[in-house]
Image 1 (cartoon, rainbow, N blue to C red):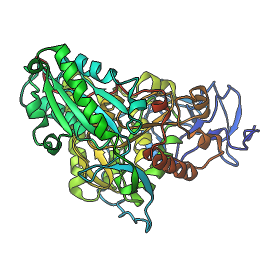
Image 2 (cartoon, rainbow, N blue to C red):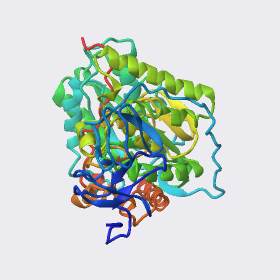
Image 3 (cartoon, rainbow, N blue to C red):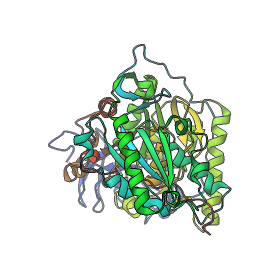
Image 4 (cartoon, rainbow, N blue to C red):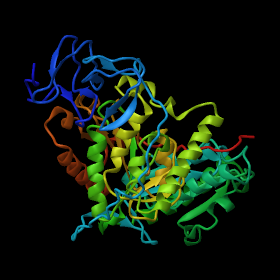
Amino acid sequence: MTTDSMTGVQPLLQLHPSDHVGVARAELAAGTATFFSTSDKIIVAEKIPAGHKVALRVIDKGEAVRKYGQIIGVATQAIQVGEHVHVHNLDIDSLGLAHTVGTGYVPTARVESPATFQGYVRSDGRVGTRNYVGVISSVNCSATVTKVIADSFSVTVRSAYPGVDGVVAITHGSGCGMSGTGEGIDVLRRTLRGYASHPNFAAVLVIGLGCEVNQIGSLVEGLSDAQSGRVVAITIQQAGGTREAVAQGQQIVHEMLDMANRARRSTVPAQHLTVGLQCGGSDGYSGISANPALGVAVDLLVRHGGTAILSETPEIYGAEHLLTARAANPAVAERLLDRLRWWEDYAGRNGGDLNNNPSPGNKAGGITTILEKSLGAVAKGGGSGLMDVVGYAESVHTNGLVFMDTPGYDPVSATGQVAGGANLICFTTGRGSTYGCKPTPSLKLATNTAMFERMSLDMDFNAGQIVDGTLTVAEAGERIFQLMLATASGQQSLSEQHGLGDNEFVPWQLGAVM
């Protein structure tokens, strides 16, 4: 067997000439004679699941193992040609990464005629891709009232207000039982302010209980929208109780809907598109298909003046040297390394280490170590220069590729990106994430055709065609870029068609709960 009889492509993928391992395009049976290049053949020694790694040559115990041309771990025992390479014989050692800061930085050459999309231009000049009204709770104690108000419009809003995408309740489990000063409350307020001022909301009602630590006066302080009437705040205690707060809130939302319904889309340049990059439920194909294809789309977006936010700090661990090499200046690189040092300390203080990632699902899909996962994850950022590093939920003001410090947990990470201004999310997945993200549309990019076909009502794009040999990475990236523009212009993602995204607001909780 030299090639797949249907596609004419090799059954094994060797991603770089220096790699010790190949990746199975499909499940390989023991004893299969398999080519990974035009002339190199191995005999598979055991069953190899799809997406998993096969040794292409003898690997000695203690030898560094390469994939993507980069070290992904060290062999814990001798590995023979054709054997399965995974958690039973591969682990990580000390990283020892060499940082050549800025040596790979190349200023982006902008296109002469930038692409455009149809967006909502707000009074502050920012542009929304959607037109929602938001109802935001300052504390868990006001979450039920917040949901009741939003839910009361769920049936009638689109018929009565055809220009509005809906009313979204933004609730959470924090806001009290915490210190009134320090990192925890700062992060929560920054996140809530980011949502309250997000351009995908035409207007926002903020609801507090009244006696919580996270007082709504401090929360909305500094928001110019609070003076313009775009952001309105009430408390349940001042309203006279839950029923009174619901009635008052419903009246305010009615008025906001009238205003939002008058908004219209207009043609704007792609520089107003800010895309949050996510990967979840990753598999052995993530770093081969969907992530590099999204990277191509990101490079196109940056050339057209737009912005992409790469995040999930624990999931770049072991690949950060690829980002520092592309840093626009040494200060940007140092900010990234400082956040990684913080994460090493944070994980240690909590009795963990950063290699407790990959997850069980990642490992089932063929990913063995955090190094391997991170190398694939960084591919989402393409090859553009790293222009800035910002803290969790901080507003992103720099065009180009920006890194935001977030946990690797997808809902928490995406929440920070949206708070920072992301008006579109691109989410690659190999196992099958169904993540929605109101008020920001979320596009799901499948890494493999089998999962795409199994979950076709949830996946917006099949990057598995790259693995199948029917689409190049460059072609897939161009299609993803065009899908970004169409979605930003109002084309619904599949998660939006299903009504998903009402429960995915998950701010990062830091500090003591008291």
